[in-house]
Length: 629
Image 1 (cartoon, rainbow, N blue to C red):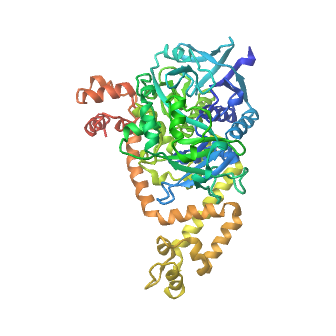
Image 2 (image 1 turned 90 degrees about the vertical axis):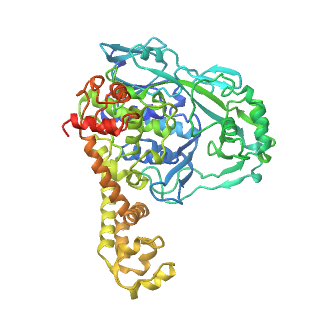
Image 3 (image 1 turned 180 degrees about the vertical axis):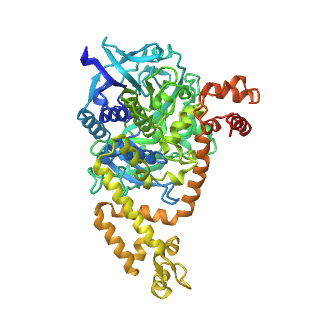
């Protein structure tokens, strides 16, 4: 039936699925997004927050590439902050607390009004493959969809199993059924899979909390946003978050319940996220710690439901509540539902290309937690790349990939397909060797041109980005050429607490000092103020954003250039393509481990081969010699 024939089918409407379906459809592919529940599109399964360390940079990159997550987050944010302010700009990371319900409906409104994009509410039970190539899917309702490409973004639903104490219930999320049969259908074609675990905290009723015993954590209301296209006032009322600490009585209560913990009684065998441990894991791993910080965060603009960040748990409900009631602010706590752990299937991501297409089954793409990652942002970034490449496979064009010096999304995908995962993968700034090049302030400069080539960046976005680029270049050029005289600037420098000049110098040298900024020098340098007025006239709504980007370029110029030079040198290894050139098992000059790893992953380039764990520098030298380099 023609009604059930598509270019691209996306399985699962989480953060990866929404970005994949939106991208493919907006590029022109006839797309169908299949979800188990249309009322849970882009549901935030855990914390209703977007961004954080390195994750915030990913969202800025998604936005620069024409994705939707940044736009939806700004639309539904109830608190916004920039993390790591005390560190350099490579570490600054935006984070927003969102209204969970409004986030869902904002995404659904976008999905339902995207041309070429249809929604079907059902559960996919089987992947259809002929001669090693995807042909479609079949659902529980017996509907067969034909497709040229399929993108699997099923999150934690594949054979999902939830744990609260010794109780186990099948499910992909609380009160939502698991998806059975799809893992086995995919595995039949030779794709390896395993099990992972994640968890979520108890949700509590705000009416039962003693807020006067908590410390407040306010948000920020400056010019920063996730999306380059958003400026002006925030859409929703901005709310507080709160912090407190566990204590030794809390820990004692938790220890008494460990025999009923699925994590410690053998009930759960799979591996959970190291960097987001449960509260019971914390007290076992750090037995000498007398307290752990908790963050109490609102779930929405008007709801009483609160999220207790830092208290993820799968202990029995009575143990969770008994422990919480040892904290004075939670002495009378009332819960909406317990924290729980969930086990689910994932597929080994080393079986994927950098496009996120399977090496085993043609035109099958996988994105999100099914690739062993954790986090909405990591999922959305993968979904965007998978959706773009699914469209390319349908209609032709160049495969879309991102390099490690180009985007955190590039680091993420390269890590997955090159190194694989042995625990849920979470992005950190430390994973990126070129993080000074991957700052949040220049995501649009890096990636909007790529989005324009694809056709995902609107003309308005391109024009605004070019206007910002020109303004930054104007300020930097002015600072490089304008000469300051001591008698005109020294009074200002003394007021700013920095050493006066002994002789004239260029403005850029003074702006390199920590105390000096473009804004605080402008009142004393008339010509600089004139330049700032020109910037404001070009795009008044982005004046502060432009000045911040220009200032970072000026203050960190040396670091940026040095890292760029290193990246360019290493690009040589990325240009030497070796895929399909060698029978690695026959190369006795390679180590045994290198032969095994190279045969399994079959890297595209020497550069990728050099990042495979177990492949040594001497092995790389052998490949370089054999490549004639």
